View 1 (tube, helix red, strand yellow):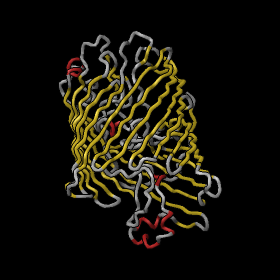
View 2 (cartoon, helix red, strand yellow):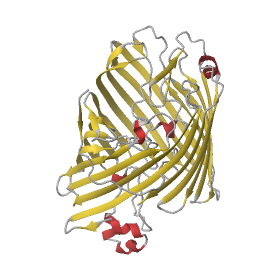
View 3 (tube, helix red, strand yellow):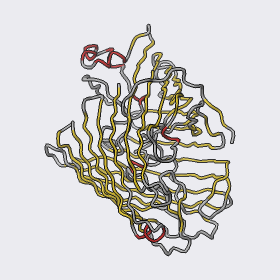
View 4 (cartoon, one colour):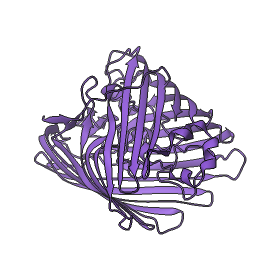
Length: 480
């Protein structure tokens, strides 16, 4: 494999604070700037480069509302502006029986730390340079090393935006290292759950209008090298187009096309090894009416994997109702269907390829399963015992394989175990997640989470699994 890299970050953050990220992200903020600025303090986005503080020119009194606004919209001399920001986070976690007995280690305790620092330099609306550095490491790890949890100093993101002078043409050219997030991260997201968030090296063209946003991109996944300069995978091309129609008040219609061209040998569900050329066409409808919220997405895939033909699909539907009560209780549920391979001896690949999802949001915080050959149904109840301060969520999932002769895939989409005769059934099990989050203030949050998995017939039959997985998490996050 041929790889290329970005320069090593010269300066890394120091300090000692907890790091981590909510799986269901009750602290998440909208993906685009609100129409009216919040004058009470900074508003933090999952993609930090989406934050904008130009409104401080017209509302200088807002600087008094929060001390960290002093780091935003600094004048370097007309017409230059610069923002500074960052994050310090840690997560303590203990996992038990994580692999259903496939690994002799039954327990893993570790502490994950992440430090981020960024600067956003703008010249009017014509030029913007965003640079974000990362330092992430693990302490007291009992289990195997996880490459997604360590990065000993590098650029998490480093890109430039160019726009035509005058702002009459709403098109932005962006090139460099950057994080991607489309829709609700079900297909492509930055993987906030881990310390070393997912990012890509490449180029994008973004068009924005009052009714339609269009994002065309060509990128390569960046690979964490831990103690060396991070690299991009030169054998992995990812490109496509994502559009959002905003013309229906309170709703959105997303359509997308994604393509993966991978010239390194990978094993497909039929046991054949070769290149991948997989194309995904999908659509999503989402919105809110009164107390109701809803989100549904359908995607189909075609192409070639080794010498086999790809024919796969996936469908998701989620919804809920929030009651107009003091605690804002919400009851919801949904289904998720991701196709599997019916016959391991034919020349078709029917297993849906999950691409680059944020599975902890879409599937569950235990990280036991990937969105491939997987069907899921879930119900959820969440509420705010202390409005705007304390969030509580309960999530119950049921999982089963879509096709009993296909693999059980892990959270990364890797094939783990297969019964080619289909004698083990399809029932993987059930998972219960408890999520408690205390919003200490605008900048800090503390999270406690617990998850338990009840093994199903497939695990008992195929893995002889008697011990059931558990997960305990305590995490702290501070943004500025």
